[in-house]
Length: 251
Image (cartoon, rainbow, N blue to C red; front, top):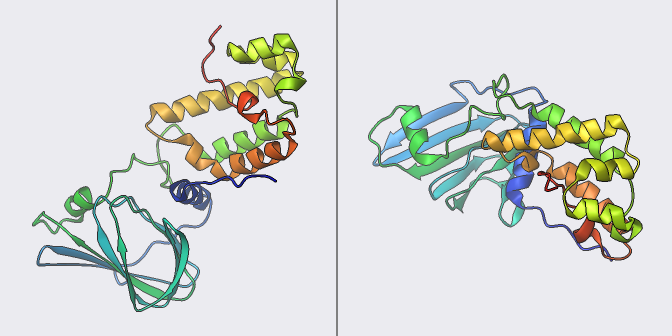
């Protein structure tokens, strides 16, 4: 029996956000998105048409999420809930939601704020985690292209040769242990083009980390599928010894 791979909801939400970059973006009008202030409370009222998917920012504070009307599907720590309004859910700090409007829907977020400012930039600074200038936003200027990184990941996965620890020669095992991935790859019969693609993939991973990004959150769907396929082929239970990616040469 193959054990289930548990993927954190936060990684699933990030993978969804990455995929959504390649789709048309919905921009709410001033009538769709309204802001209210009173008694130390900020409320954001958002109407979204059926079929709209929204991935929000990470919230710093506990808050209330009020589904005023309509039916939505929303991510939670326990999984995906379908909610028909009116209903209120309580959200803890660190919450990041992905919400799909199954019907036309209106939702309102209520959160306590310390700032007296009604400038939305000041309010957001208090209630949500800052985003880098962001790989999630269309037209970003960060030197990290998520769609091409996903394409490169798919290319690397497709070129992977079947084989685990006991399938390798002693010399190959030694190269793998000391992190000499290039010599190991050559000995396993990878082509110059395949080795170059893998080298570029490693560089992209390090580049993303240097930008403060988690590159694996953008490919969790791809790597999970590859891991499940490898687990099914791993008849000797050796995947933990032969399935890590060396990011530093140790020779």
